[in-house]
Image (cartoon, rainbow, N blue to C red):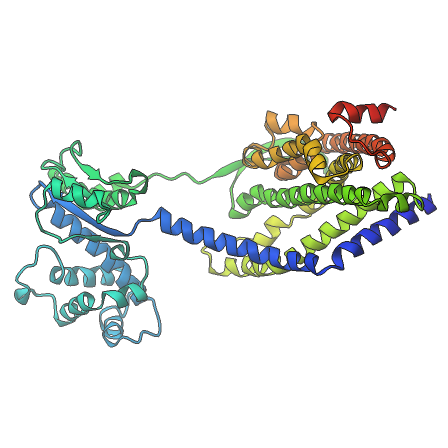
Length: 523
């Protein structure tokens, strides 16, 4: 046994050193995280650019001034957002804004009504349609701020990004358009679209329309609807003669705090357990993170199993095609070679994972530690993700999962003399490996459901399902039964692979499909 293990260790060491001693390996290991970050950033930028439109829209108003009131509601929202940001920002260089913060919003942190009051006193100087602004009684400071706002739109967007007019600008507010004119502009993509406000919008929105060329990018319609709803709601409240405070109470949404049931053991006076009682407790942010954290472990597990097995198969094919395997088999038996190569590839994959954890995990971990300090609620991200039970469960099923599939791919590689033949023969196994990735979300949502329970006893998926459902592991007897079941199938995988490997490394012709592999096992 000692000689056998020594031979396995030597072969594993050889494969590991052969992999990590090349520049290509370290370039790939170091560039991998960088490429992942670059892809994520590019995808995020492209998503942001395609998900949110930017451009002009137009309004056809058949009502008695609702279009103007909606414009003012949009303006009020922008002013509110801007002034609120300025009120709580330090180090303002703009002299007028510093004056507003000092004189008009001195107690804004304690009294948010000051912000609303200042916005309402500024709004008449900017509202639609323009009034005789010389006769307005809003004070000198709101008038100066209104003038500054109109003349410094780019600076406004720079100071407080995300205001409405940064994305959507109404084309010639107050002008009259025909639908024919606007249809031409929409078709030529000079307009994102246009809104048609019917005469009786307060009574019904039946004839309200938004016209666009690309209806899949009509986010401006939803944005405009929100402001139109606020304006129409005020009219309806007034017509119903409902006090404003009552109206706000009526439209206030109902929310339910999320709780979960918990079984508590109830001890008796002498300390023995007399039974259990079901209680409830609130669901914390930590609990939500803990429920989905195992998905991260499953991704790592799948990465190691899939790519490690493929590397093992291709390495075996290359050594067989170059006749190097004959030299290796003259100094070790087939079992030592198969086990040693599997151990060497496992060490190689762990090296890659280690490099990635340092390059990606370090900033993520630092961010997770710093994030709770800026959140309005307590949360322990590190503790929720790195639970001891998760880590231990991951190690157990990583070993068995890698061995189960590694031996299968080793067997396939041993009977092939080209990478193309090996890819064709291993295609069914590769398809099986794709399924766990597709089931990550369904299993995480129902970790104790019938699908999860059935797949826990289906050997190809057992390691992945047990990792994905680690938030609700089965009772200890069932858990141990699953481990014993998986150990048995892993041993069976090695037994069959060893029989194929021993004969397959020395044959020149590839077996005819699955039946050929079965014949090698039986022979």
